[in-house]
Length: 247
Image 1 (cartoon, helix red, strand yellow):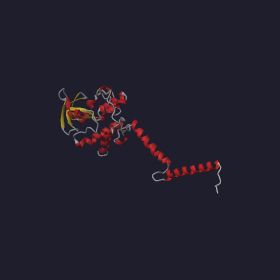
Image 2 (cartoon, one colour):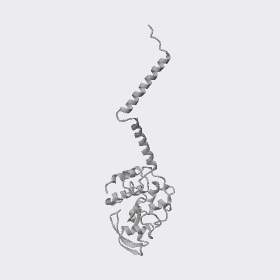
Image 3 (tube, helix red, strand yellow):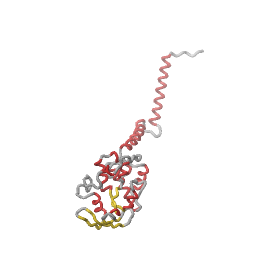
Image 4 (cartoon, one colour):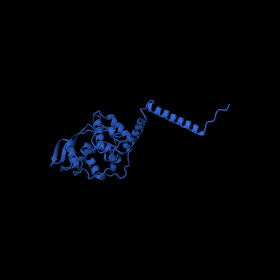
């Protein structure tokens, strides 16, 4: 005996019911399945990950000299095209809104007065002699101002200006770059040859030979990069995380 024929409207209705049941089943798996607390959470995880990645490519640091490297955005090293020392203002200018600015003394002498002991002065600013316990080498250096002797002690930018440039500094305005170049947080009196050997290298390429100062050096780099919202490379950040919390 032939089965009774169903009219087309009945068939379409049954197919629609089946589709709804299948959809509900899939949603049920998403809502109660292992590893998920619901579709909303799944989307939160996805969009949160995407948001954190995109934010990292456009913003870095805290805007204050914090010591946490996790707040620094990872980005490839930028181009050095256009970099010159003049892009960071007049060397050692006192006309800058950082600690020691507008005190009537140039920045170099401010740092020599801070970091040297037993200093002698010419007037109220110019350091003519003193002794440096060099943090980079661990040596004691006797400083005497003069054409042939001043270079024995140099003022190092802890985050080198060339590295500032390729870490987002090329996008800063001249006033802010001048602050980076004269901020005592980013400056230290150091052995001249050691400073020259460092050049523009970042923390993953150069650390002081003195192991007792390496942690402090890296921490200061983190502070400067946080304060001025500069980026780091992946290998640079790995070094910073290695030293985090150790000094």
